[in-house]
Image (cartoon, rainbow, N blue to C red; front, side):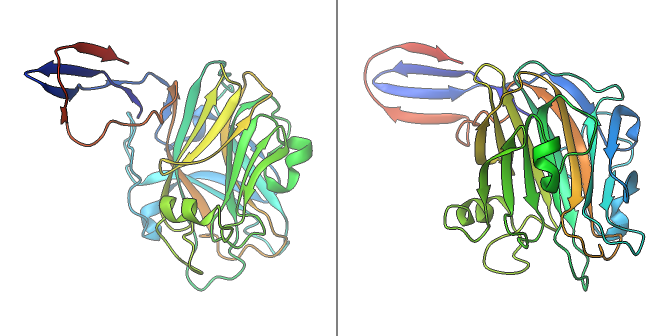
Length: 300
């Protein structure tokens, strides 16, 4: 959770000391442990499903960032697309924050944890999660293959195995602003910093690990910024000045989706006041700096 900090500089006997004081917790606008769908609105295409699921059955460890009210530590939402039948389809689904969708018209951060599960010995594994803010239209699910006609607000897409033609996308109202293939020189450093697994090559992938996602809507500057595991990916100008927060999952390829365990697990969903990715101070509560004079300065 984001915190606001106060730094106090004090000088005495020619030495400047920086004290980093404890930070107050950011306000929580919405919080859900992903153990029941009652606080969400489902917007789904055919051949998709969303349900609470004990993901420890798949050998997945408990997600970080436990939120208040959690009674089932290893239960989250399992989202599946193109599973359970013999009809191959490109399809996806979204969960919108709020049983009656909540409209957020202030600077805030949508935060959640996602594990894109890729079982062993399964082919055609490329799937992705999608998520965004400032959404105004709930008539259809938003996902990568339907971004022009459906995708309003600021939103992103991230692939699980670096197997898509474009593994990361950032959009405003369905218009592609930033996109990277994992192997591109400008993308590889971000992927390697954000993710741990190297499932199919030299560039790290988002699959089979917990990924902390933060999407920051800055109302004052009309932008949406995207972070994964606290690594900044990109920022897009955002036309909508308010709207709904949401996340989802898709199978972007019209081949059979393989095992039902090929899915997205989402846990510990929050909407936080302000920008929850304000940089933390350097490790340690005390820094010693050279200097002279005696002064006191406070900065928030």
